Amino acid sequence: MDIDSSRRNKAPRPLTDSERGRLEEFIDSIHYSSRYSDSEYEYRHVQLPKAMLKAIPSEYQDKAKGTLKLLWEDEWRALGITQSLGWEHYEVHEPEPHILLFKRPLNYQPPQ
Image 1 (tube, rainbow, N blue to C red):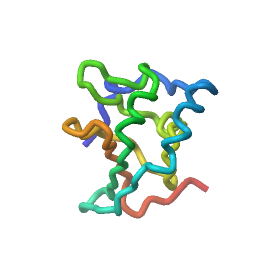
Image 2: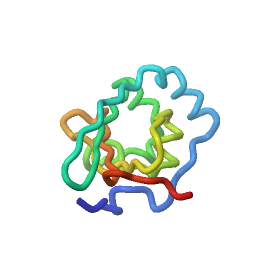
Image 3: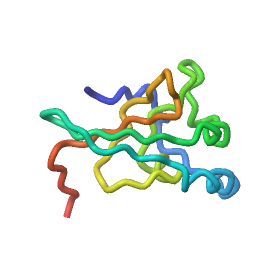
């Protein structure tokens, strides 16, 4: 399950102060699922408030799919998503574009 890099910005696109300010009201309403796993990865999904999608900059949007692009770690953290190290945004649940899917290798150990 490789990441389709064509669905990402070529490099992380930082938020401006005004963009960050528009997103702050939503941060406390972000929902994090419990972790679940298969033999290779652990997963979780992050549910953004639906209204938050309208406040996210257009450069983060995949207009062809009607969802967010796959976000770099710097981008999803800038949106207010907080998770431990090692998580990678690998998919957006297209029927519900406010649900972002994350994975990381089982038994992930951060670099020392």
